[in-house]
Image (cartoon, rainbow, N blue to C red; front, side, top):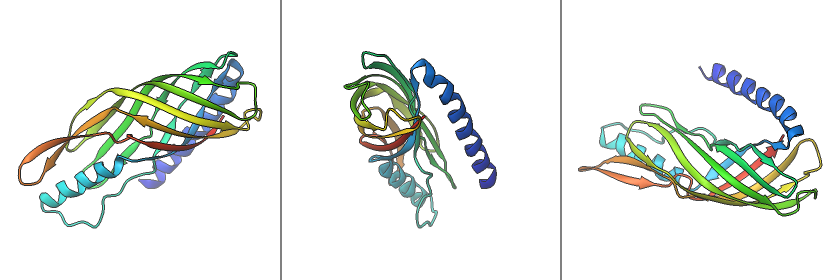
Length: 195
């Protein structure tokens, strides 16, 4: 099963790189990267507590790396518009969770013709989430500031710090069943390559 998933991820990455190389000619840029999110630990803690309340004995809940994809089109003025998918968050085991944040944002690159340039972006996001203990989701405001390096090269890189106010509602099964609203992507630090 893991081998099949790895082969799928490699094929998906190859398709993204191939499509991105042609889209770049039209002003499209395609950041693909890894993200650390502050609130996902809270989600893992609720899953661990719920499993223990249901009688399971466990050391930890397994999760996958948090991969994100944020393609955008940039105009000569530095303004741009894009959409985002991720960071994708998964819990696999006796109970599951699949969380794919999706969003739309507007951005401004301060020095669009420079090799290195800071940028800001803002928009809205919603978590497309399913799994055990999930009760709902609420959209929220998103903002980010970052820096892109080697912008004049075919493949470049960047770093970003951002915040996402959208929430997911999870059931907590301790003595009584209650719910808690969590911002899984409350604070994010992303490192990415841009095709």
